Amino acid sequence: MTQETFLSMQASESVVARMAATIFAAYVQNKEVNSTNEEEYIKKAGDLAARLANYTDKIVKSDEEWMKKE
Image (cartoon, rainbow, N blue to C red; front, side):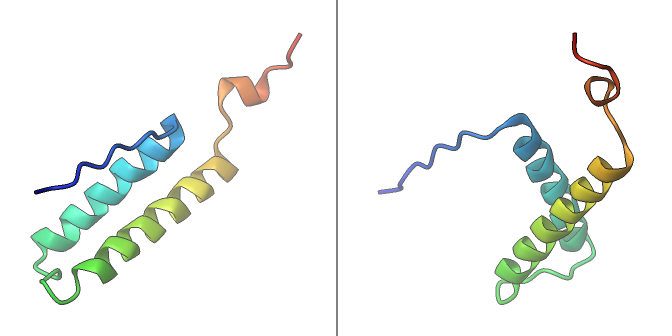
């Protein structure tokens, strides 16, 4: 019997998860991932995605961040 897992993510978490999946897919495509190091590459992809998102947040301001609230 399989156990179902339900996730509830904020929009920003969802973006980072998609980034991590894309990075992980690149590792897989480059044949860097195997059954013994899969967990390591999942963590590596997640860490890199979070770092990229954090850096982007620092250098790019959204419209809401630039505009004064009334």
